[in-house]
Length: 283
Image 1 (cartoon, rainbow, N blue to C red):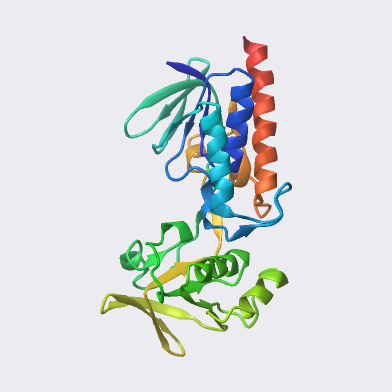
Image 2 (image 1 turned 135 degrees about the vertical axis):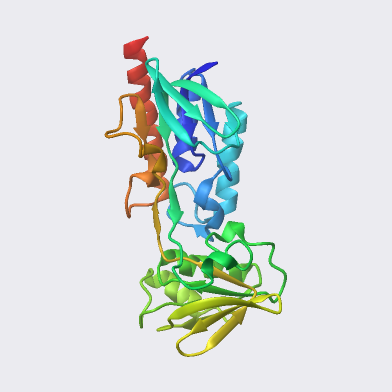
């Protein structure tokens, strides 16, 4: 089976491209390795997306997923490992399948930077995480340390507080680098504490919890959440010297610091419009 377009990634950019192409009558498939909606599942509230006065990230992701289902768009939960040029199109390889398409949208978003701290590798996936959505269900009174000083760290803290966790935010400098609005909300939340100028040096397990050793003191918690930045998930482009004709890159994977839902949606639609022109020229 050959598709007109395979979209790799079901965040806002991939979803927007998929809906546009499906409405245009094209045969498409979306490949997503984790959750439909992407990083929206981490977001506390999305307040700068037109049409919503403030919506929880998970809720907005649910709306987008519902649109995919409404249009009967095929979604497969697999991990694309290789994109190969083949027969005036592309072969997309996953551990379980190979699929063929005339065009591809790469909308794989970003991946978190990992903490380069002793014990981090051993703790990851047990007590150390990098996405709010990956944390185990939080029971009342769970203690979570968030490492980071930017928008994501403070937004994560607000999200966790709403889930009735007790939160500590730590970062290296004296002042946070987040929006003042987020900083003010965090300071007004009694379940969130801010520990500036903290330098974690190691992690270890103790009595079913994690201990973060710092230069000042040790901090013990149920979980640690790293939020120290993200980098483009562009590994599928590694085998290409330049992006080939028919392969379109959309969303956070190419947007640098301009990572917003509205930008990603527009980027996905722009890619879909270019694909329609490309397909019509070769039909």
